[in-house]
Each structure stands twice: as structure tokens, then as C-alpha cells.
Length: 217
Image (cartoon, rainbow, N blue to C red; front, side):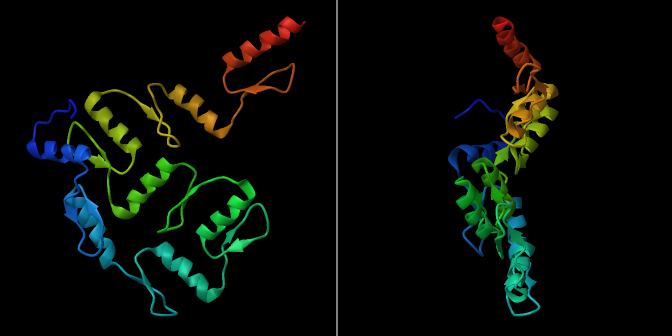
């Protein structure tokens, strides 16, 4: 399927699963399945851990679920809208409300109510609940939850430097290129035109713009 090569057969077998989608290690407690056995063990430990509510008999796997549940007893509404005075018991309820103000789509984790603007960030976040590590190294058996962690690891094999944007996963050979790229996400403009209100992320764009004013003179 690809040109990857491995010195060990077990490493090759693990890599093949990235092509076949095979997940041979299944959880006996739920429908989750995994490519690697250690990911299954990490996931199973979540089932054996229980967090109990002191007010009632409810129990939860995750602390954030317990915290949100406690608000049903206290009446607390810790999630506040920045656009109006509305407040909510659950983060997912706040997200649904905010979309009425912004009209924007977003991705909400049903397990912990974390919010994400981009789908790839949402998908990577879900691996923290499932224990899955979908980003596999083609040089060894290592696998990672996040693409940026894989890129950092691969540099140990190749000796190459790369700098990865945490917002969109774009990678760059030079750090200054990454910094310029990050400004496009932040909307940061550092080079203002002295002739008008225009501002620019890079000086070369400002220089090009100033030529327009020079022609007007």
C-alpha cells in the first residue's frame, strides 16, 4: 500500500492497520476497539475507576461529569454567555445558546462538553477519552494522540527540524515561518500603513501596498 519499511514484523503488522483500519483489541465493557493492546489496557482502566456523588448514588467515570452533575444539587450555573446574561449548568447547553448569537457551527464533545471550532481538533480530542493513538510512526512502533507529537518524534529519526501549528497542523521548516502563519489565525497585524488605516501581517505586503499610495501622488 505504501513504501514504508520496517526491521521488525510486529512493527509492520501495526503499520498495516493504518491502511486496513483493523482494530483487533476490543473492550469487554463497551464497544470501543483499538489498534494497540496498550491502548486497550489504558481504556479499560477507565471502567474500573468510579467517582461517586456524595449527595446521591450516581457515579461517573470522569471528574468533569461528576462536577457537572453536582450542579443539579447546588443549582449552580457556571457556564456564562459572553454575549448576554444567560448562564447554564452544562457547557454543551452554553454552546447551543452561543450559536444563536454567532450563527457559527462548532463541535462539542458529548463526554466532557469541550468545544472546538475545527473538526480535526475535535477528532484529536476524542482520543483522550478512547485512548486511541491514531498517528503512527512509519519508522518504529511509536504512536501518538496528536499529529504534532508525531512530527516531533519523527525528527529523531530524520534529524530534520519542523515546526507545527497547533491550530491547523500546518508544518514549517523555519520557526519564523510558523510565527508568521500563527498570526493569520490570531488576526494579528503588525505593520500599519502611515497613509491610511490598512495594516499587514508581513512587511513585504505593506511595502507592496505603499506603492499604491506612491502612484496616487
